[in-house]
Image 1 (cartoon, rainbow, N blue to C red):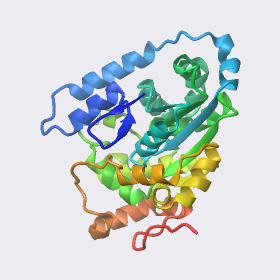
Image 2 (cartoon, helix red, strand yellow):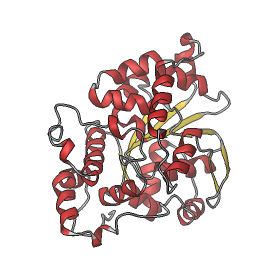
Image 3 (cartoon, helix red, strand yellow):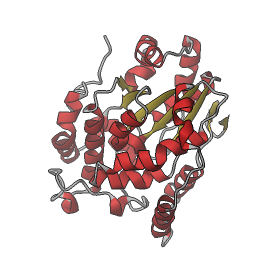
Image 4 (cartoon, rainbow, N blue to C red):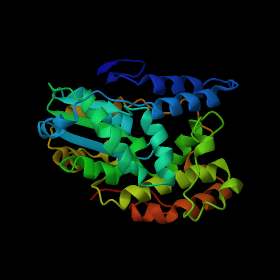
Length: 315
């Protein structure tokens, strides 16, 4: 569903849980007990989740629809791309962060990867079918909360198109810092811990919030990269229509004219209203060194430059 909102143009309907967090994150006061209550609600909803779709219809329904999943770390352009697709594809059902239970499942799967398959086989794939619009030909879902569920997604929907949307880690870390992700107002912060096998697990309690946000970017993108999905760079998607056409439109087997893409990128309005960190070119040595130590290897594997070089270019 699309609607007019405070951004320019027509955008996806924002889920109620996202609206609540958007509102809270920009308040100057911290509400006592809010995080605890939010975790209780999410936990209760997760553990009492249900669906009403007939399981016997799953093959027929998925065969009649093209399923597409865009997977990315937070603040990597998933909202922009979902908005663009929703506005230009009347035959497609486009959703963004559509299921609040994915939040809790993300934390579970972070510690035990095998739980992703259980989540999909027992609930998530049927819940999706319960939301599926039978009048649409294509279902597109963008979500940062399914990055650790990629293998389960592949097995649940073997004919689906999946892709990895990535953004320069320096920009993502700065944006996540501004949005209270893994901060005091993030209800999930106390639950966020690296897996015990991760090299940062024993260091976690002594790491700063900046270091933890860096870890989150590199961990999620490493998990996605290892799934060998088509890789789409946000910076190139926004600045080069040829790249957008060959890497996105051709992959998804859809068409969006140049003028529509140009209008959307000029009107993109999902920036953080305030920043805690300056642009990465003005970071102090401490932040630069910490970022390079944690994210440098993954930046290189994703074709991003080292911290003292310019953004990537598409040839």
